[in-house]
Image 1 (cartoon, rainbow, N blue to C red):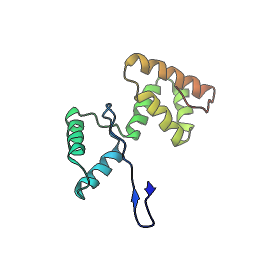
Image 2: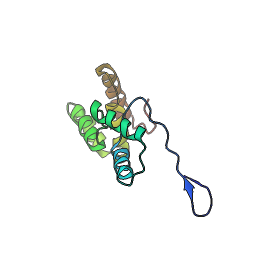
Image 3: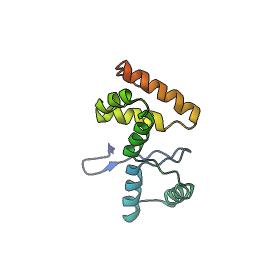
Image 4: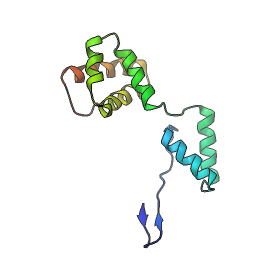
Length: 125
């Protein structure tokens, strides 16, 4: 937010990207803004498209459970994963679940296993 003067400010909303992936937080902001009449027609149209395409972002806890399910076949790795801080678990889960193809998911699960075994603390790419 950028202040205009002591009483008013301007909030910048970036244009939606073509990926149409709305997080739960963005959906809540949209619905609150819609109730107060702050959403333009273009915003309503964008949300309708989102709902019709059924591409709403998966909740982070669901992503963590998906990754845990994948790691179940490696019990020692699953224990390492569960010993990590929640923020690190989220990072791994998002890294894994945001892959679009099965081939990429396999590569990413290998990277996650390597990172857990080596106690790698950096970002995964």
